[in-house]
Image (cartoon, rainbow, N blue to C red; front, top):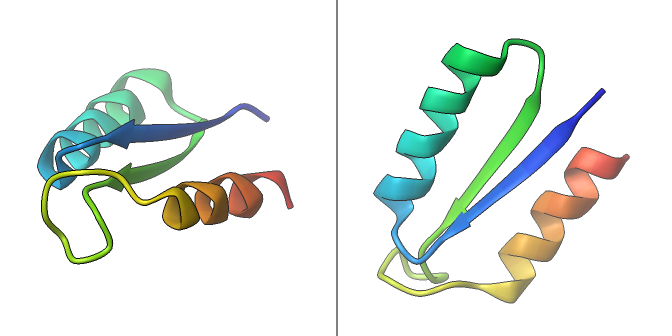
Amino acid sequence: MVGLVLVSHSPKIAEGTADLVRQMAGEVEISAVGGDSEGGFGTDPERIEAAIKELTT
């Protein structure tokens, strides 16, 4: 199984890209991580790490 973690500074871009990939790729596990911990623009290393761990367990 293939798993993708999509990271963006924008939560909307991360989710939109994840939706597009799900429609096109079929059976791929996807986790979208966008924005900082408060939902603004930026990234959150802890959320990214958690998404990676979630897909690898």
